[in-house]
Image (cartoon, rainbow, N blue to C red):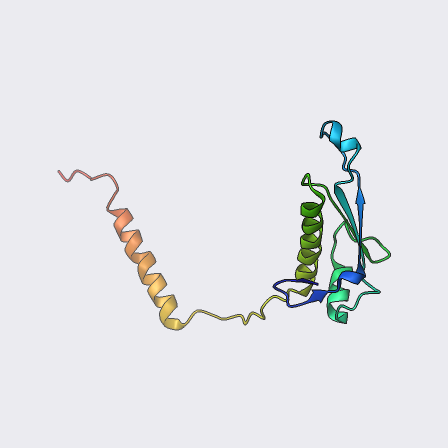
Length: 139
């Protein structure tokens, strides 16, 4: 089970993991060892709550296909275990992002006293700055 801060868990049998060869530089070993991980997760067929499924499908993320399948390729590390953990962590971050609901904000207005204090402070600063000017000669 993958489980994080959103409180939503994903069953391991809903996630399809396969080992593939990593791209890029890596020396002689890169052509022999399948250390990268290819993760596939079908959002529509998963056991996630409906609200989170809709949130995931609405996300504008290039890792989510038009069919509703999350495809993550993890090849950041040299070992298969670290790449597997990285792929699962990135999937969980996507689910957490879809599950996040911003707090409801109530718009407020400043009180009369706060407005008066602000104007008094502005007036005081204005007087302080006006004293910085050039001194006029009185003959």
